[in-house]
Length: 373
Image 1 (tube, rainbow, N blue to C red):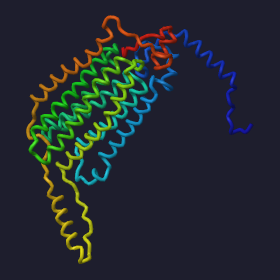
Image 2: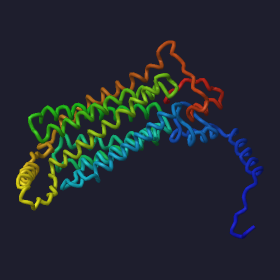
Image 3: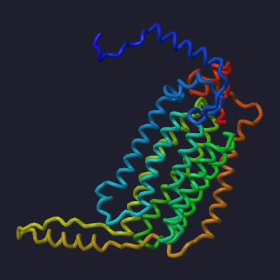
Image 4: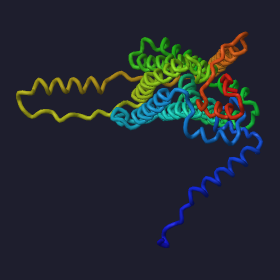
């Protein structure tokens, strides 16, 4: 054997070591690894191996989540680096937030498909809410106030993540807190964008921009109920596949309109650079040259209007936050009470459907109904 080669472990030696580790794991107390594994049960070390292999009952849905995440990453590239984006004379904080929003929601979908409901998923949900708080500021505050508000939103999201991941001992309390505050943003955005669309309906420059934002917020809003229902029903319910497909299919048109909203915002705020086409030199193309000049004049004189608010509407923001928080709490607690109905229908999961159910099967409870907490 050459000196550069490392001796390989004999197969029998590896088998004996794995057997020893398994024997030690059987005598260890239960360990709550909810940051990595969904938390329907307290699992043991034996359930950890299933996390990296298979954590969803419908593999085609899991594939769809990965493909949707990839498309959202492409939208992030488009809103920041496409030809249309490069033709804008500046880049606002809003466009950076939409860029971040596309990436964070794509990661959220992939994490949800792999790890199901857990503290890791709650942290990803809070990260994607940061962009939505940025949208609030752009809707209701003046230009110079928006960066200050967004810095405060960053601190708030960091405190929220710390609370749901490390401070709250109960998974149920963490889910209720984060989801209520997150769904509040979705209610808030629908109302805010609708009022903006009505307010600027007669403005040719701002009406299509706010219209795109309102459509995007509505598409995202209608993903709330499938998300909450899927969390409550679990991956083994007969309707779970329909719920997951509703979630994935609504994301792509939603972010198409969000990217269009961000690009229109910057086109109104900064204007676009016009790249002139060399005029033809032949005398017979005089009409074409005149048409080109007319088109150039039309493009350069496209209507523009600053989309920022002229005053700070703090009172309106606080009022809409209160309304959104109440609606978010009702949305979260309503479906969560369904399992408490009399004579619930039990949908047993196949062994290995999720990491949590694999651990439950090892503990002798393979037929346990799924609960996110």
